[in-house]
Amino acid sequence: MQEPMLRLNGVNESLQIRIETALRGADIPQRVELAVLTLFPEFPVPKHLQSPQLGQASDTVWTAENVSLATFLKLMHEQRILDTALDAMTVSFEGSKTQFSLLRQAAIVGKVAFPLPGESPLGGLINVYLEGQNLGDWLEAATWHKGRDTVPRSIQDDNTMGLDGEAVTWI
Image (cartoon, rainbow, N blue to C red; front, side, top):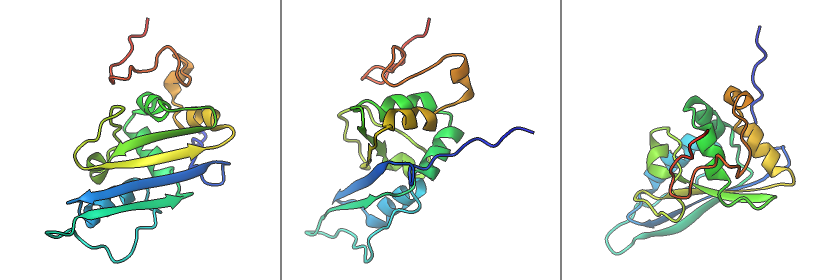
């Protein structure tokens, strides 16, 4: 019988986790709530959500710390986007910290999608900030899959996708 795969969640794993999303303009809080909770079900959504009205646009930021990444990581594994995730989650990697964004429109339907760096897509973003002493090892473990036995990957290696989102061809 095969051993069950170790599932990381970031909490109690020596990581500091901060998740943020900004509600601006006509963003409808209930839809933003659905997007965030689909990826991060333990995110503490503020009470008394007010929908924007004429003359009263949304302008707030929801922030939470140390929210489990378990569902987010599980979805990445199910969607088989682990190499892309490693690349996207480490574009801003600086040894013990990194920051990456996720598309809220994709999150609403249970998909994990990363915008190209510098993009501000329609529907907004969920920003994730991670910090920890062994963050690089944690990211590689969190995105590990059996294919890495054959084609090893590491943070910002020669197989990292380009900043334009194009894949690097492996030789």
